[in-house]
Image (cartoon, rainbow, N blue to C red; front, side, top):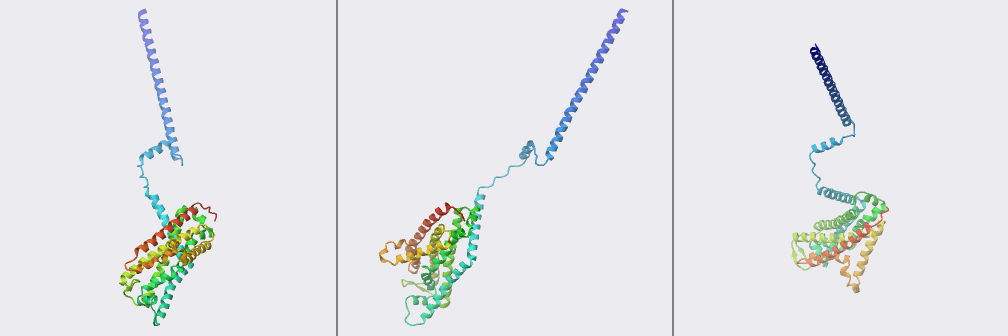
Length: 357
């Protein structure tokens, strides 16, 4: 009996132990399930929060931004010449605007019209005088060929009327803007003082060549109407064809225009020293007249080659056979020296000038 009882007790103990282990295993499994549920809920909450952050305007997670950047292909960098092309386009646009204003002003158009009328008056006067007997020299040269009227018109106009017209436009370039109170507004735009000064000078140069072209074309047309066309007799006595004569007129136009461009540099430089345009215009004309007076004094012949107006009449080098290119070269070098000198003065003054108007 004792053995049977002990066996029963042992079986009972083993059963209790198994039940306890089973309970502990079930408890552990529930705890694991609860932990997994808690982690899943946390993950779900994080995902919901992430979605909420993505839906919030203006809030972009860093990870998403980095992933977006990685997904996008790298954009090609802008080429270096683009800003240069933009600046060049702005420069030409500013120059075009300035030319439009210059050639739309009634004052400038009136000056061009007056300069165009003068060759007509000269041609008609020479035509009337040519009817009298015994006329020779200049009258005979013009009456003998229509192309000579162009050179005669240059001789009359290049020393006074053409410089007046160029001085008005060039002298008004900077001083006119300052006097009108628009200069500081021009500089407020990203134009730059150097670029603005260059635009103003190029505008005056274009007008100078327009003045020269108007005189030449009007004289040429008037000459063809009033006088016979054909071969041209030069100052040296030789004769050239009409085509060669037209080519020499073109060379003379280029030379005279360069002289007027040099005078424009003087006027622009003087324009940077004042806010009254009439002051710059008058100062330029006074310089021209003083140079003309100094040329007429024989004792001052040593300084005559250095005076700007003394080179204006060198265009008559095209009336020699062959063309006196040495005289044209000396004149062009003098014009270039004046442009560099007074252009530097204008830049030095304008770049450091205190703009108050």
